[in-house]
Amino acid sequence: MRTLIKDLKENEASTISGWATKIRDTKYMIFIILKDRSGKIQVSIDKKEQPNLVEKLEGVLANSILSFKGNMVLSEYVKDGGKEFLPTEIEILSKSEALPLDETADLDTRLNYRWIDLRSDKNELMLKVQAAFVDGMRSFLIKEDFTEIHTPKLIATASESGSEVFEVKYFDRPAYLAQSPQFYKQMAIASGLERVFEIAPAFRAENSNTNRHATEFTSFDLEFAYIDSYEDVMDMEEDLLIAGLKNVKELYGEKIKELFDQEVIIPKKPFPRINLQDLYQELHKRYNYEVPAHDIGDMNAEAEKLTSKYAMEEYGSEFIFVTGFAKTKRAFYHMRKNDIPEGFDLIWRGTEITTGAQREHRYEVLKHQAEEKGLGKDVEFYLEFFRYGCPPHGGFAIGIDRLTMLMLGIPSIKEEMFIFRGPSRLTP
Image (cartoon, rainbow, N blue to C red; front, top):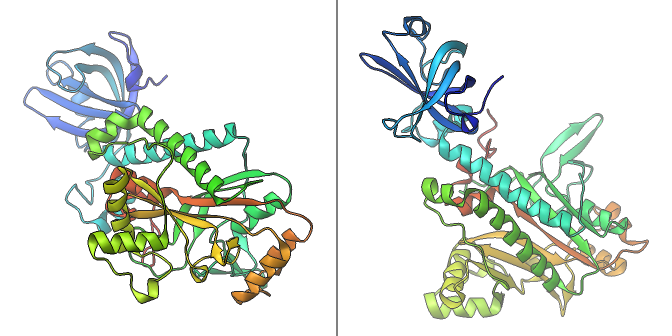
């Protein structure tokens, strides 16, 4: 039976298996750094005393998969943990060829061989951190009486938002890959579930080649009913993010500091909140920033970076909510007050991570707003959800990959995602 490296006990017969991350052949000894999911250990083979093991290792390269029987001993001469494994038997489970990349490889080469690139300590931690973030948020929502749902990713109409969609052949008719579960989240609210969330892929056919866009990504969506205003939605997101960050810090805070040189900072409630017009004035006064004419009523990447700078200077906060966006820049299903959408963006570390809002739940108003956007016919199926009663509700979505990228200080979402999909990349 295999024993994980972290569970090895001194002088107890054990079998360990994993990656030979390094093989060092000296005059008298062969040293192998073996790695499994729990950690690493040095395997030490005496050439004179164990010629049979030496013979089996002939031609075996680093990154091969090896299994050893033997026992772990403590050693003051071993730097990494003060432990080493003394084998009595070896089995070559899988031989590796010479790797086609090394630590100096450019990003495209690394992505071509992503399964090899992911073997690094940093990438392994990155994926564990993402899982911990998601687990912390999911656990919080379950405790808050939310129900996890799974919505269709094949849809009949291409009208969820202003973004482009991917068309696919669906038997004898076209279908589209869903940009988000927005319509179906709201259908769940209309069904009486009241509080729902989903963690699932979303697709955007945008020809964007930036450090934070992908054509397929993982979205963390939630929607909940019987709110009084979009302030309730912002309150919920504060609690959600704090829960996720706490879980990450507890499990991996020290390791993140060691490998990524990033501090996991748990924000304090409430996050600062500012109206967009007031923000424009502050950015102009402090940084001489003028919003471009085509971005009036919205934000762009430069404004987001300056907004984070302002939030730190004024409030000492990494997070800031921005409200008061123009209706022309928001989706038709956002509720409006005095013709201003009742919604927000959340900015973190110089980047927008969330667009959220109170939704319009009144059928006639929603129908009018859809027609105003030229979507009346396209969203008939969606409008049906509101003809038979639907409570006030709101929600938001968070891009898990972008969130992890910002938390760990990774320069590009291409490096953060398990497998990146962009306009020019469809493999591996």
